[in-house]
Image (cartoon, rainbow, N blue to C red):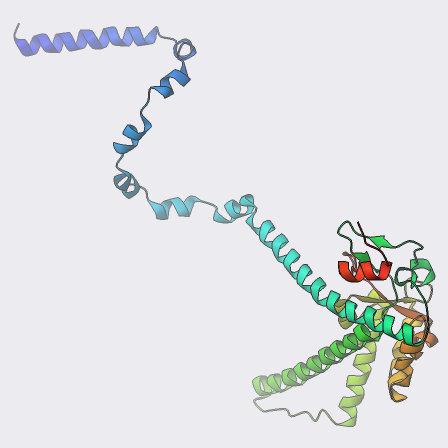
Length: 310
């Protein structure tokens, strides 16, 4: 028998023996006798990584095919990134809005304190509220901020809220007129110029404004301007505003302005800061930053309470 033939026979015999030996081996039994920790300790990771050709490995990866089979949207949802972004955006927007509201609130409270001093009136800011919203003891947060939620609002935030509402309605009216002109040029191929000072358009604008304000007060107790400033209109006792009161207040507001603003100036001298339209509608305007508390800065809170807040 020649050398190659001997090697062939020897190879077949070795393969047969190896196959029979492997058939008799129980992998679970073998694995039970292996000390994995000791095995890992004997592995030289740095040497193993040095033998890996990373560039060649990456070259064999089909990125396009991998991305085509991956549900990227599901991966993003599972990562929680959208929830994190939404929560962060919400907190940032809320903090920025509260900061702006707090500046106006400070001016309003300080102006009220000065006016009370001039009129020789004494009252506690935390109990200066409609009966159902009044507290006998101040509500102070853990950081020492005085919560004035539900307390009567003065003329400063109320005036700003009225200006915001007026700007919003004028902007909406301008957009409507621009939309009419755009539709005319697009559909009829001619410009439709509307005279906004015409009696008909003025009447339509006023009626729309009345309806808008009434619906906002009846549904939410606040207009967009009041919501932005953190104000809410309630009944005189602090209960939710009734539809009849919302209608009366809406109709009387122009009267308060038409009297040279004297109807609105009643809110300056009235103890409960109610203007003429509030007196007629038996309503009041209070601070309400729901869902957050209307809190004053610590320094002003300490001054109003007359003692250091722990």
